[in-house]
Amino acid sequence: MEITSLLQSQKKSKYQELIGVIDYTNLNDWIVVPVTTHDGRVHSFVLDLAATSTVISRSLLPSDAIITKMEMVEYSAGESITKQATMQGATGSIDSNVFMGKYKLSDCLLHNLPVDEINTSVLREFPIPLTEMGIEGILGTDVLSRANMITINGLQDKKGGKVVFGSSHKSSKNELSFPIQMAAGLLFVNGKIDEIPVQLIMDTGARESIITDSFAEEHHLELKVLSTEKQIAGIDGVPIQATTIQITDFKIGDYSFGTQQMILGELGVLQSFGIQKASAILGMDFFRHFTEVSFDLNNQRLFLRK
Picture 1 (spheres, one colour):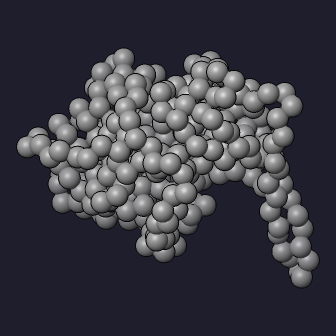
Picture 2 (tube, rainbow, N blue to C red):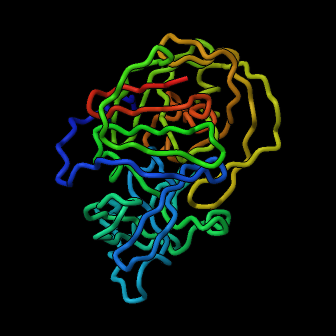
């Protein structure tokens, strides 16, 4: 499936526009923001532009919370079979033992900003590495796209910085700008890996940039291997073996960023869309080269400020 076949006309959101400034913490190279639920408790969420749905841990909810189970229908030999739905994570699908269903959160605060109803995906529990850091949620584009623009500054600060929602962009001399596309809740920018065109998914929930084995094999890439002792894991918490590599020439648009270290491994989320041979993940290791990054969802532009 081509990326262009995923493109859909953007419908005006029925939710209140997200406007304002919030603080975030740099936690293990994730952008972590505080979300207050209706009971007054404050929870730590990872800001993830590649998560199409906001995901929460069951621990956020009261014991009597009613979680709606999601079902899917499979057809075979003229018969239909109803099964409990699974959820797609970065490295694989999350089965019904972990994915409990959907729950509507209301009256939340994103730091100090009111957020309308959020139709969250509920996991029975988050992976141990996340829970040990106090992470109880993933804030996805179902909420983040309610802003016309998202600007993240302080990216090179080890402690954290600010996220600005909805402010107009002011151009700078020390700035790069590229057109972007939004499809199926994901943000794409055109790039090249050793002169091979690639659609880059901008992923603030990924600490490292990733290309798939399928992409490398399809285009016969000759890659410099730095290490074979690498593991990556998504929200399912199941690690998969990967390789650390070096790209000779990495480009966004026609602008070259020179050599770039990336991870080589297969990603279930790209396979689920059928785009594993044409796409790659652009993660926080790339964005942290800049002092500020803006995603203009209204005018569909990416701004990188040095």
